[in-house]
Every structure is written in C-alpha cells, then in structure tokens.
Image (cartoon, rainbow over all chains, first blue to last red; front, side, top):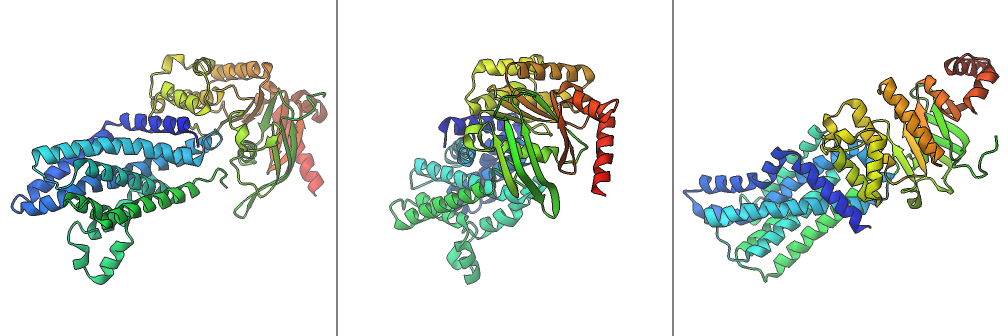
Length: 245
Length: 244
C-alpha cells in the first residue's frame, strides 16, 4: 500500500464531486434539510424528533456515501479507467483507501452542517458528546462507502446501481429501530434486523444520544459496524481483479 | 534483421478463451525493442486481447507473456509500460490538467513530464477544459497524453489514431517516430491498413492468429501486392488454401 497514491485517488474523487454542484448540495445541504423536515413533521410530538434526530445524523452519511461511492466506482469500472489503473502502480488497497478517505472527509463536512442546524436551530438535544456522534457518523460513512464499493460490482449501469437503494438500504432503514424498537417487532423481523449493519449503527447512535456512553452494548455495536465495513471492503477488493476475461 | 538480442515482448503458447469463444487459439510472437510494431487486422481479430495480455490485464488460459524481461503485469512493470485503451480512459468530469495531474501523482512522475505530454499531443490550449466537453479526437488525445507521462519504455497503444483527422494522424505518427528514435518501444494497433507504412515491423492478425510478421517493404515484395490491404487479402487466401 502507498499512502501517496491513496491520497492522489482521494483528491481526484473529491475533485470529481466538486465538479457537480448538485451532488455537493445533496451531500452537504440535504441532510440538514431532512432534519428540519423531521422536526416539522413531529412538531406536535417533539419526543419523537428528540429520539430519532441524533441517530439520523449518523444514518444519513451511511445512506448517502453508499449511493455516491457505488456510482463513482461503477463509473470507474465502466469507463475503462479502472483497467488503466490496474496497469499502473495502484494496488486494490490504495484504491479502496482513496475512496474511503475522500468520502469520509465529505461525510465529516456533511455531519458538521447537519449537526449545527439540528443542535442550534432545531433544538435537538443530546445527553452524550457531540464529538462522539460526529465520530460515529464518520464510521457510518466508511461503512456506507464499503457497502457501496462492493455492490457496484453487481451493477452494469448507473440505473442498476441506484436500484440497490430500495432493495438493500430501505429495508435496513425500516427495521433498524428508527420507526419502532426492534424488540417490539415480530420475532422474524427482529431476527432480520440482527443481520443488517444499520441496526448496530442506529443502536450505537441512540445509546450515545441517551448519554449511555459507557455501556458495553455500545462497544459491541461499534465493533460490529467496523467488522461489517472491513468485510465489505475485503469483498469489494475481491471484486477488483487485475486480470479480467 | 539484427535487432537487440532480447526482445521487448516475447509470447509463447498464448491461448485466450472467453466463454465458449476461442479468441486466441495459441500464439507465439517476439517483438524487438526500440522500434514501432504495427498490429494490424480486421476488428475482432484479437488485437485488443493480445495488447491486454501484454499489459497484464487479460485473463489468459495458457501461455507465457514476458515483457522487458519480466512476467507481463508484474508490479515492477507498472511504471515501465504505458497503455492506452481503445476507448479513451480518462475522467470525463475532470479538466485535462486535473486528469494528467492525477496520473502524474499515481506514477510519481515529474511536473515537466506532464507539460511534455500535454505539448506532445497539442493539448496545451485546452488544459483548463473539462475532458468530457472536448471533441472525440481531443478526448482521445488526453487519454494518450496520460500514457506518455512518466516516460515509459514500452507504449502499448490500442487504435490511438481512430477518429482523428489526417493532419492530427500525421502529427501523432511523427510523435511516435520521435519516441521510437529516443529508444521507446511502441506497439500500435490499427484496423486502417494504410497506417502500416509508418511502422518498422508489421504483425498481421486474423482470427486470433499471426499470419505475417515482417517489415512492410518485405511483406509487399514477398506477396507482390501493391499495398498492405492487397497483401493481407493474398495472405488470407493462401492461408485458406493451406487449411484446405
């Protein structure tokens, strides 16, 4: 692995994003607007906003980085640039690290904007540290990038890549505990939620928001999220053979 | 012909099968260094597959491909071999300068080599332009420039002149000769037979096989053909007669 090459790839990916103002708005402004929408939707029942506001700050980076990294990698695969990179001194690890660095940095900006709006303007409250929430959000971004890079191998077109949102991401949002506690769901759904990484992301974020930073469950959740990210990155590396048919 | 003793590329028993399709049934070839070898043949004859095998991104069924003394695709070759894919492979959403800067960083090459590459393909005036907004020919030249960064010893160029106007094609061939004169080995594919006269040696391919490998002048003399197109046809005819 070569840090200089990873950094070159990260800079290139950020430059590509910067060339597309709509994507910039999607990544930096939309999460804050969605938090505001949630605040407004639950204005008669503020407790709900207080329960899900913080976890959403960390779920947005997961979902959005999944989307943009899967499409960016798909473009790399289909435009021939991936084949060219494979003839250059770029290892698969350099490539994955470059993507992870770029999108995690963007996720940091995203969560800063969304947090500033939520905590200062919308009156969202956290019993745990905001720094811990931001750190968890960035970890979720890494998970999103890892999953996105992996699924990009199974799409031929950008249209197919976007289809992973309703197929793979929406079910996780629905059963992760955001709408109703996982323990209160039918046993089959509770079991299903156990195999989805977002359930652990959600639980970790809500534990921090409730001020339970010392709990063992939190550390277990963080480890599970890291494990999912590492496995997805390794699986993603396996989908990047240097030699193709 | 007395070329340098060790060939730049040597291939033995190369076989490539894609699904049920035998792209290259079994190919032996030795390409000398320091010259321009033209790889000619109709589209679908296996030129691109052969080039991909030389740069080490083709999954091969059998055989051995040695490039500059190393196994094709080995890590130590990745700064020594430059490759231009048939479809231009640079980033459409970046400017010309940003594209070349990226490849410079990946190769660890000097800034001067970027300036040289940009000048070599006459793209100086367009360096701030987004690559995707350029014309097809300009876009292809960005892809070529990216391969010139880092002064590779071997350049593998898959149809670099396709879609270019005659003036630009002349300019590019002049560039290829300059590179060759300074010691670079070039393998250039084309399906346009009249580009053959620019090459020091020709490899004529059909159905994944090499049907001729010699300098263009000797090929014409041997077949008594008036041009390379004719020579190709007469070779294919005698090839089919042998097969019967």
